[in-house]
Amino acid sequence: MYDGIFAETTTISGDGGDLIEAYLARPLGPDPVGSVVVIHHLPGYDAATKEIARHFATLGYAALMPNLYSREAPGARPDDAAATVRAMGGVPDARLVGDVAGAAAYLRALPYTNGKVGVIGYCSGSRQAFLAATSTQLDAAVDCYGAYVVTPPPEGSNLKWLPIVDRAPMLACPLLGLFGADDKYPTPEDVGVLKKALDDAGKTYEFHTYDDAGHAFFAPDRPSYRPAAAVEGWQRINEFFARYLAA
View 1 (cartoon, rainbow, N blue to C red):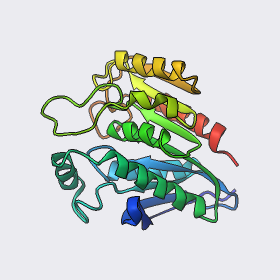
View 2 (view 1 turned 120 degrees about the vertical axis):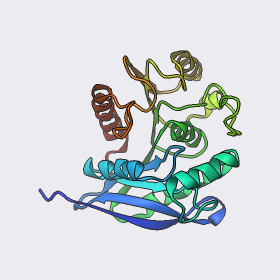
View 3 (view 1 turned 90 degrees about the horizontal axis):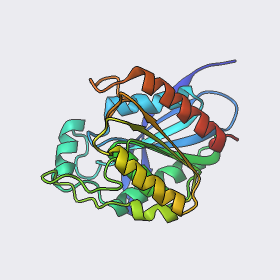
View 4 (view 1 turned 90 degrees about the vertical axis):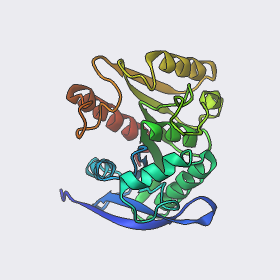
């Protein structure tokens, strides 16, 4: 069987019809595939998150990562763009929802996709993945140690985001959560609060917490990387998306 992927920068219609940059990676093959919107972390639309999109292509998904900082810092280096957006309080929630909806619409319109779209994010991107999954129609969502879902950002962070755990009753698709037992954002107690909210709302979800893992345990370019947790986490993600995004 032929094994190959294709990746490129493209332009999509985001919130309010704004044209924003995005990174698309897809497998090369004859069969319709499921799709994933990848939400980058607060450090930005960077090489590490583009590699995640390409990894999804190797797993058999079309993956699209919108550049959430396109408006404030077009063409800027990821760290400079992130500093600009952090100083203004972070990406507004309503605009994030519009950008993810635009990314999902773009993926559904591609001739080689099957119409099913999931979303995944890491850290602040996971908060945004949860927000999107409670605000627009998606088929599956993955929360990788989503910060500030249950508690607000710490004092001095400049971020204007509010907790969104009260949106649990609006979750419109199954949710997978992957967390570190040593994380501070979110803490295991925060995860427990989110779990109770989902239980009370009767939602479909599964959570897994890894010992000896803190924040960003998926990131191989950081000291926080935990190979065992990351390998098992990727297996959980692949199984979860295969269950809900298959043709």
